[in-house]
Image 1: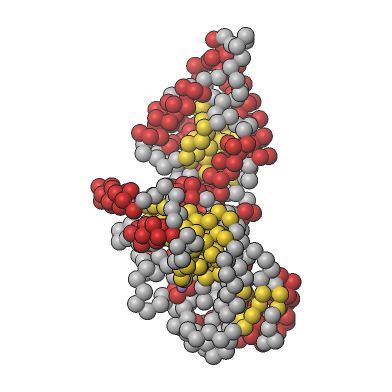
Image 2 (image 1 turned 120 degrees about the vertical axis):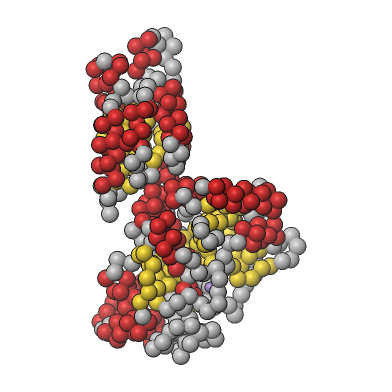
Length: 487
Ligand code: MN
């Protein structure tokens, strides 16, 4: 999809044709120059002067699938009652760019003509009031339009809108149910579709096995070459790798035929399969598909959405699980991993393909998987949970480190990190908020972006930062609960 954004500039007839022509010319120039700096094109649509012009533009934006957000700005004063009918119809994300065409006040030249033309300072306030009055979710970004910081923030917001668009078109393919008796991987699929747009449906494992039987040796040869190019092969068990290729090709064919961008499976239902897909799921994730283990369709979809929000539309974001702690005082860390399925986009070095016995599940043969250590750097972990009647997105700031010890007998992909505000308070906060053991770990997407995503989707957002305390978090959760009940 060739995503784009629309630039809608507010004005009115009061100032005469000459001012309107200047506004139009400058708005066009700004959209063109900003398009060179932003990750997606900004298309100048209209200098809006009437209620009808605005409503027509918004209706057109709603209808156009390639338009995934609008950016507004008021070069002059633009009386906001004429925006009510249009804005109340808006179904796309909305950003108010509070900027002005000129950088400074030209002391010697400034006169009343200049003031009539350049009055964003009060035009943008009138515009801000009406969105506040309409209780609209929106992003407000203030700053000079040629400033790099403004480009960065606008670009980040645009990527949130990509996440919103991907979410609204999300289809998740489930193979088998979620793991027996597990609570946090459950959720209301009807409510989720209503709020987030996801179509979450099930397909039989037997249908996947039939599809696997149809995969040809030539198809497997081709995918094996891709594995060889991208990974070091550190096993003699070539058949196990080829079996994973067979699984990957079949899963991909089924997903593509249904336009699914994410899938889940469970080790408890591998009927007719010899191996839990490990390498297969990992390589599919590297292509941008979302995955969730143990039937966790929520984390599967969130992985795909956050990958799409990242660098070049497929960033370093991955399905992750909190596994175990290093609780030694002064050197406290979490170790995250999964049985097999962590995306190689997190890897610090070239991943190795290995085969090892996997005791959990119904594996007849040793599954092939990618083994690596995660990169160092700032990241977040994100978990979407169903609180009954509403969704909560829990996000925690973390710092990933090079693992502090060798773990030669742990043949999985793993990441070691320090959670904010510190390991123990961080664990207390996470557990208090109800965050799952499954998360999406991302080096690419920021907490601010996830907050904007939650705002647009109208779901609760909880952010655990270096400044969070258990007390402050408990108070926040209580108030959130109350607010959501009043809504
Ligand atoms: Mn798991």
